[in-house]
Amino acid sequence: MALVIRMRQQGAKNRQTFRVVVTDERSPRDGKYVEKLGWYNPHAEEAKNLHLDLTRLQYWLDNGAQISDRVKTLVKKTAPEVALQMSAKKTAARARLRAKLKK
Image 1 (cartoon, rainbow, N blue to C red):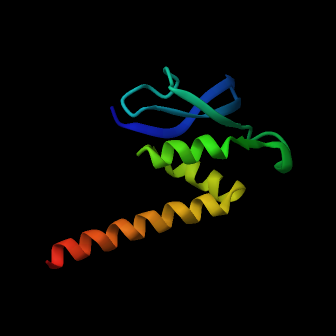
Image 2: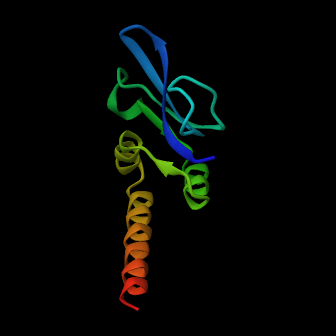
């Protein structure tokens, strides 16, 4: 089961809010999810429109969950240090793969 961190749509027509959830990548957009990590309200003022549980987000990333592009931009806004860790892990993995291929 491949897990992905993505947004789940909530709310009324033309007034959507989103939950940031961990879910199976095969489940539908508004289907079941494993855990709720936070929420995003694009209609609220900038200071109060996003909440993420960064410790649980880091836990799921460490356990192999992939992150969607939209959620990645939200993480970069709220916690740039987590985004830097994600990119550092990715570059380290690429370096290990290059070293393995050179042998």
